[in-house]
Length: 460
Image (spheres, one colour):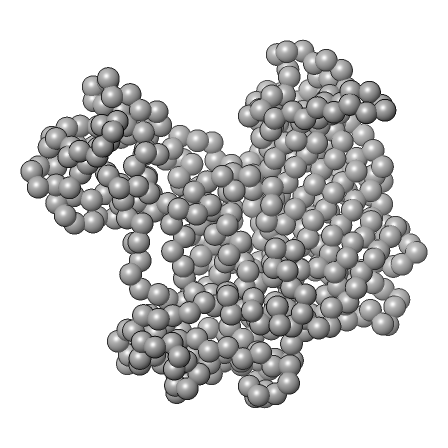
């Protein structure tokens, strides 16, 4: 196996000639992928890998990973001293980037500008008297002088003409940019709509701030791969990390996994529901399966889901469950709410939904209905390119064992030990959901759907 590294966009060079070796690669669902590089000898200072270095890993000439180096880690043991550098993949950008809508305010009126910060380098002139623009003078907010022209920048320099002001100071704060509660109504929407908004924002804001695009995404393919569309309540994600927003949206679909495809120059973000993933067979005692330890989870398989969309006529949420439903959504179609093992939820029907009647019950049933197992397994992959393809979201079944025919093994995280040629996989639902019993599942869906307390005009 030949490993080459590209440092900060330079041509790939053999890793050993740079003084580094490729030790492990972890690919994780909804968390940063990470590659561990070990320093095997003192590297040339010009080719050293320091914090912030952009690193691309090639294995046998194939692009295998792209990420940003973190601070080096030092250790001392029986084998001597050891220096390793973790390199985080693109999800790391989502975990650092704030989702912050921003609007320009003038003359007492809020005007939405692309729900994004202004573009670096553009000019802005304070309007005439009566505007509510303010600027920070170092100790307090003071009215900005009408006619003053500013230039949006990433670093503030008020000594220049026009003054350069840092966008970050005003986004999500009071002052020139402020619109933290832009949405005044509560609606239900599909998971894809929410994910699409977050990803579009992520890519556009990087461009507007003059930052390199961390990844690409095919939204049309993403809509297909997400499968059935459960519809959680729309929330205001203002001033939260994009990664946290995405995790919150995907909580309603625990069968969806996220991974990055590193084969292109810019990694591509992908998601897929287990319901549309092609299953693969594993035979106990035969390669590539080396070891498996898994526990089936029949207690997390409901007999059905019923969602009652009640028309809300009173403000008091205590009336929920007693009002006439505008629509009853259930799956399977012949179940009743009071039957054992059936999970029933009541949500408010609001005019914003209009004629849209989401197949929420079926989507929730599909997301948790397959009898999955939690645990771990080891796969032996002698060919590096095969090992590099093991990722979150893959689904397996054990062949030749009738007792496990209904059990699906859903991969969450994988760790490739490069030297040993093995891949360790964790199986089950995302650990962040902490689904242990059917009661946990009930609480999970209740949290996902949330409460609606806004009284709106009844639908026609």
